[in-house]
Length: 471
Image (cartoon, rainbow, N blue to C red):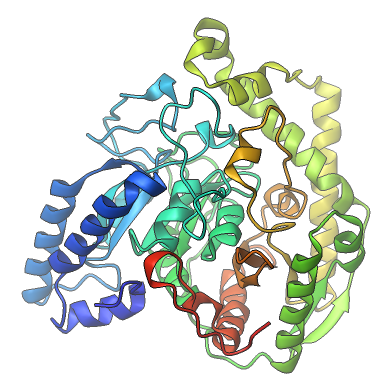
């Protein structure tokens, strides 16, 4: 078995009986046992439960009751996703030993699709803190170089998928928390349209911005996983009652005639590492060779989106955590506690102004797509991963201006590998589309993946990289 099997490859071999779900699950558990002490991707490993799920999958498939491409596939969940009978900690001392009595909808749906859960993954505290001095569990490390951060907040998810500890993982994204680790760890991460995937049973950060999405090695795997996760959920008041089509339906279709927009002035005026911009320009050259037409765009709300989204995020998080911040502040690690304690709740007038900015951003994007644009492309992060020591500094820099416009607008956005920095760390490219147009993103992302081969590059002890286009 390949050290880094994809979901689609493993699914074919499981269905034909070439490999067994039990064998695949044991391989992942062995890899976790060998590497997790160094990578700290997992907080809780549910080995016996995973093997029992794998045995059930094997029996069902042998009996002809194949549930689909996730049947028998080992995945893991960000430790914000509630799991009945298995602790859900949010990487915080506040919930260090909390065991939910029910499952999050996304966990229920993936289990119904036959996925095997290996356990719960590290994150930044409550999806917003940073690796701090008294963090409840060791912070995850970047498998490309453990002296570097995997970014956050879905740090363990990025590390686990990149290092081959699981074949896919759930992540949450309120301001970039799926997309940042995808870029930093060299994997594929999708923040779907707001409301596309239920957040019922997922610990909240900022409910008006919270998303749940899949993190995988390849674009097709990502579409397969989202297929099982998506759909209306009456238990979630933010859930969109929108039909779920086939997310793979456009994969392998020609890109000629598609129009991709680039916010060039925004990119040029937002601090990016030079080698990141160079990698992005080479990626755009690949897309042009694939037949897309390029246009550039610019509008004022784009420059305010990062600040607006951050203010909404912090205000909603502050309101949610305020009782515990006042009654049990020491249960939070210092970075998260101090960040929220400094928040001043917006006045009604300030809330109205923030929501007006959000509506204006959405209107501008709607006009852009109405003009014939199919997709937007930009760097997925402003540079490669930071060192762990810099993340532990008293005031680490936060580089989130390249993602929060899509958190604020609720549009789908995917980040995938885009080559490497001069220090050998992954870069990511971001594709965004109109609301509920995830299939269009997958079309372009899959074509770029096939033309470059960056997703064939893997870290750790079996570093393999055979990109078709050396950027």
